Amino acid sequence: MFPKTVETDRLRLEATAPESVDLDECYRICSSDPGIDEVTEYVTWDSHETKKETLEFLERGRERFDEGEAATYVIRPRGDEDSAGEIAGFGGFDVEWDRRTANLGVWLRKRFWGRGYSGERAAALAEVAFDDLDLDVVAVSHHPDNEASRRAIEKYVDRLSGRREGRLRNTLEFADGSVHDEVRYTISQAEWREATA
Image (cartoon, rainbow, N blue to C red; front, side, top):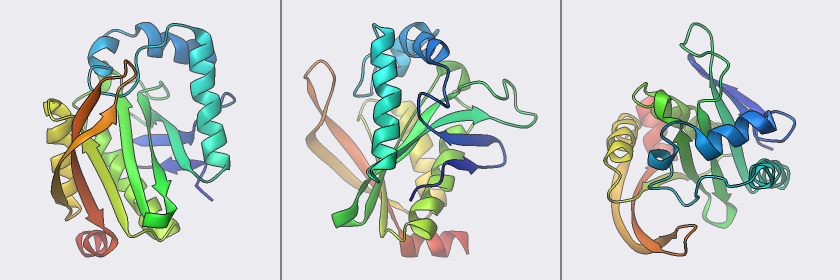
């Protein structure tokens, strides 16, 4: 149902599975990559403590992909990009079929921040959601204190003619059990078609 690979001008996204990602490399990135504490500060998972955690993350990605629940991709720069072929991070979407909505998510290693990869990935996945899956809405959210995500999301949501919906109270549960607000944005299929015509 979901494409196994998605390519943009600068990125290659491959469906996450133990077969497509080197376990040792992924564990190193998810546990001790420089800046991992900043990467995980505003996301719902903590840095991995064991290789088993990383394997479960990759297996869960494959299972949800195969079951049509979610598409998680390993993000790699391609072509002439600095560090082409390396894991830059992971991103994708889960689908609420009853609401005809794809919920985007992404995390990038700190050394890949500031390159515009988040917006490029979001535009490509919005195209999948609207053209391939014929969904009505693409949604994305961030922790209210995550200024870097806010700037990146506002930039691509504006470019795709979406809008800020508002702050939702107590909707994000972090790995430590704490509950947080989130700021949500949406792009409708009609808005996206007008913006990309």
